[in-house]
Image 1 (cartoon, helix red, strand yellow):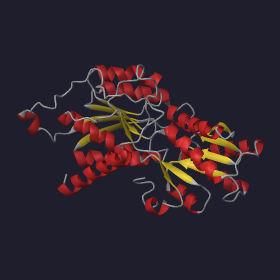
Image 2 (cartoon, helix red, strand yellow):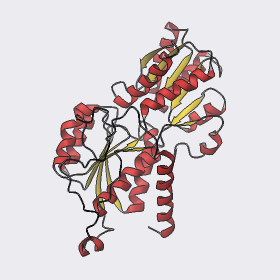
Image 3 (cartoon, helix red, strand yellow):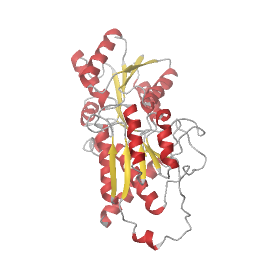
Image 4 (cartoon, rainbow, N blue to C red):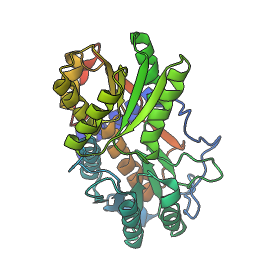
Length: 353
């Protein structure tokens, strides 16, 4: 890696830490002190590196990444995967991605088993179901494999939680809660629906819970509408729901896979920007377009590029030098994109944002 490229990597990391270093993830368990994962060999920071380690500090690191989502069917993951790919190239890391052809927690659990059996140097995994994934991830830790959670995290108590080294990703509960703040500030709406394309995904469920908790403070009801990752099917589901509930005037979608069907529903119903309030999680070129024309009030940005990049970065640091994050959480969001700052990110949507 060139000096210029290394400098860019370090600048990006420092910028992220400065932006979010003091951010508290209210919905996620935070230890008072950073605790080492069970079974990991810890490096004494005062110990001098061996000649062998010094000579081998650019040897490839073998990282397995297990994800519940994939670029092939969810554009959010295209940005995450680009982050991981770029980090792998920058840092001379081999990343093997194991994913599924649809949202399937059982298949994801099987992929964790496959990853553990491969005995990688580092395992990065999206913990979309902490109970289902608990045993195979703990098996990895017991085998001495450092584990980094990314995008989705074990939200259980400290005593129950899987002892991964750190979590890289947004606080989804706060994203939903702050979306409620935005809707209240916009005014006029009285009934809300949270459109969830992956019901059972704990972090998506937390997005809806955050919205519900905030709007309940103002006496506004929130229903959760389960859709799927199939756009045509989801458009029909939203249309049918609206026909049965014409008083709904506030919609929160949880990513492009529910936002795009919402936009198709708007067009089919002949609804104009402002007829209902809409906000969404995540960015895409389509979402950018809809923020600009007023259909969507905002998008909640979890910085998916960094969600993919930083676990690979930390995996390389842990394996090569025994350097690990000083906190259990590296927050990448939430941040909000709206009409006031859309110009800053619109050219990056779908690639770096």
